Image 1 (cartoon, rainbow, N blue to C red):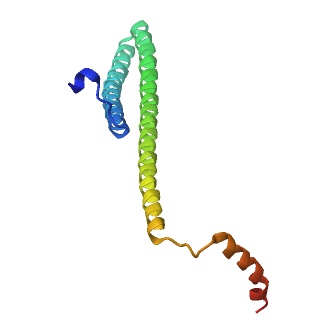
Image 2: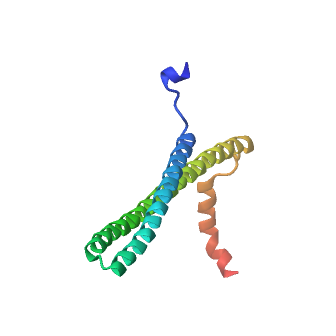
Image 3: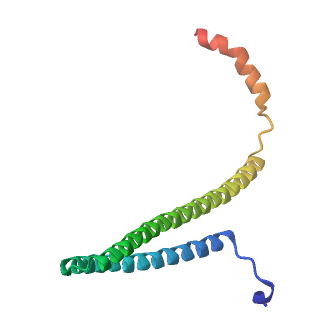
Length: 141
């Protein structure tokens, strides 16, 4: 029945899912970039071959295609770095959330400890006033 009402995922699970999809996209980008780089090498060889045969018109067309391919490769690098930056930001958010959760537990434990120890004889305002009053005498010694 959970699939009908849409069970809410925790923040940690959502972050894991997002990171997984980002890593998958980065791998796909790498694959695409590798095919473009192979195509670039093939174009370079074809351009050299066409120029050697004296067919300059087809070599020029291939050179324009080569420039386009190199631009796509640059875009792939840029997109990969952006995706990795988003992944890093998600990881930072996750660690911040875990830290907040830990601090919540620590404050709860400290509150319980303060209640159990109970220091009725300790009055911070009175102690500070007494320390201010006695400080000049302590310094002279």
